[in-house]
Amino acid sequence: MLQRGWLLQGRESFFEDEVEGRRRLVTTEVLRAEQVPLPASAVEALGLPPGSHGYVLERLRQLDGKVALFSINYLPPHIGALVARSDVPTGEGSLNSTLRRAGYAVAGATRTVEAVAAHGPIADRLRVPAGSPLLKIKSTSWDSNLAAFDHHEVWVLSDVVHVEIQVGAPAAPAHTVSQSPEIGRLASP
Image (cartoon, rainbow, N blue to C red; front, side):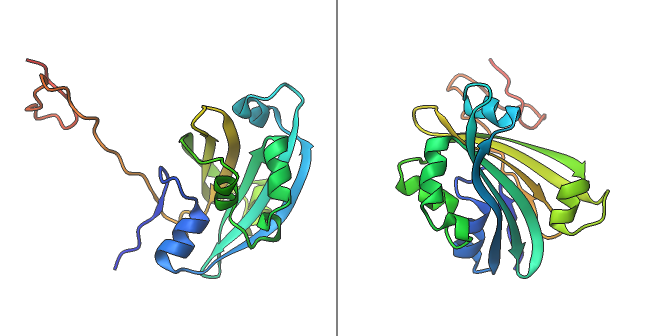
């Protein structure tokens, strides 16, 4: 049976999807969990004032004993404080479950994917030679009030974790005819 890849637009994270859905062994090593000055890109993504502090959570994930990805989550200070009091910093807890229980359910997210070469600390963390191919995924999640509460960057070894993206066509208006031989193109009467 073919294993489905890590579904990017799913609301659950890599951890929940792999552990609960597929019964695969996922281990998490927390490398850093602390309140620090956030990088400008995270401050902007989270809609915080310039120079803001926040919570940084760096984790290395293994799938069935193989290094699979390295992730950095940036959280606003008040959310970081609740994460710091949970079992997430031990590597035993789920960030998404902790956030949901605290009322921060993902209502939407924006994600970008790009091919990058491993370099410096990222190559070291993933235990690969410099120049190795990786997928880099950036994501910002927001709640039902459109308040961003998590910005993260993930570097994925795509030979260990296959990334899956599902695309659906929007519903066509009743007066639109889709008889065009070009897939995905709508023709109006």
